Image (cartoon, rainbow, N blue to C red; front, side):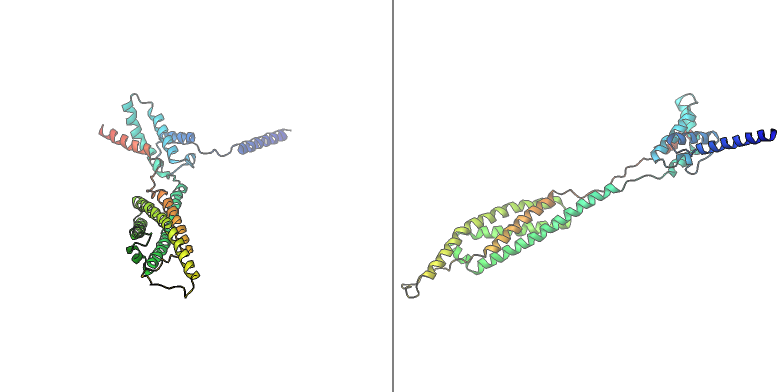
Length: 305
């Protein structure tokens, strides 16, 4: 009977111990547990050289707060603020290493956004340069063709509706803007990009004016050619006049392509100029070890006093 009673008591003790062991789960680290650990370490005069389990997973700001709270709790017993600062300075070496051990947490993902915007701006600038080169190339071909077919000679004779000054101004401003855009791509100065975009305004106006002025001359040339084809060969009697030949205009497809690439150049140039400026170096934002800095100042104040 006595043996069965002892066995029952032992069994009940084992069951209770097992339940207690199962219910006791490992406590998660928190600011409060870190504060209690700091207070315990100061009371036992133990210098902390690594991050304890009570402070694992906390940020540097949380550890700073826990260390400051522990020092304040231990120095609060002294009367007067001067004595409290002096006591905190004497106790700070026990927890000073804990502040510098916790690494600073940094966020990297936001740094990729400015790089993507900068890459898109550079791409727009290169596309604008490509369309600008094509536009100037087509314009150079049309101007060379106009000079080769007597455009200047007709203008001097007063029989051309297209003023040479307007043609050369249109071409010169376009080339100047192209050179300014190349300087922008090399230097990255936004002011140079806007200067090139401003030059596009008179270039566009002169180009539209040249197209409008060439329409009556183009129709007149077409009617002259058709009339010449309608006159018989033997009917051409009388003295021949030494008039310049009618102006030969570039094909309409070339003129249309020149206009399309000009519009594309204006669009891409404005988009590149309106893009964000080059991102500056990211400012480091993090929790400075304020508590440790304050502890060092307190140590100095305690030594001088």
